[in-house]
Image (cartoon, rainbow, N blue to C red; front, side, top):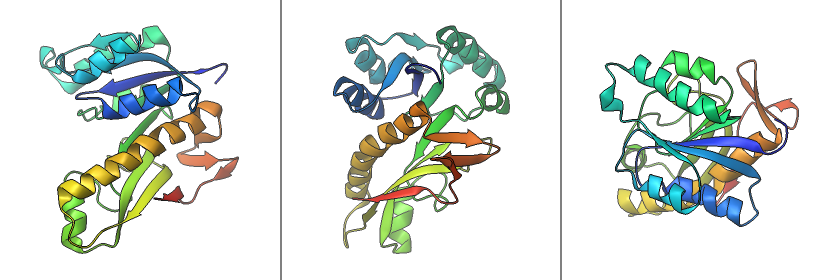
Length: 215
């Protein structure tokens, strides 16, 4: 990826992870060009965050399209005008079609609030508490057609506090996400982390496991 990595951020809601990227770039901790903020929700507060940061915004309500494939083709048409090197799913509440994933193969990142491969899917914090796990956290991974199953790049991990609620655990994990997501994206943007032949490569070596940071 020559020059600064042109990055599209996809949101559906308040855009707290988007704000983490905006702050990291503004503070000089992240060398990405935030080229466009896309949302499927015209009421998403994240659109306002982007506008305040002078990031171009595009909004296409998914309800205007008959199916997932046609909606994803419309997203591709809009995003390709910005020629993105990297796509960041930041609370984008849509399951991507195989065609979309293939079009941007190796260029899409997601963050999942669990230590993947544990707890794919929803309601991860309560599931961790119900299982009595001692560790929890979040995982940045490349996106493939397998939901929450793409190769992992970076995990942030914390010890579960006895007696804490799912809401308290959620808040602590979100604070980790705001640190590790921009960091992992920066690795991809600089070429340190790459998607190659279905694997994550870090520093020129296949990463059999993600880098883990304890918080």
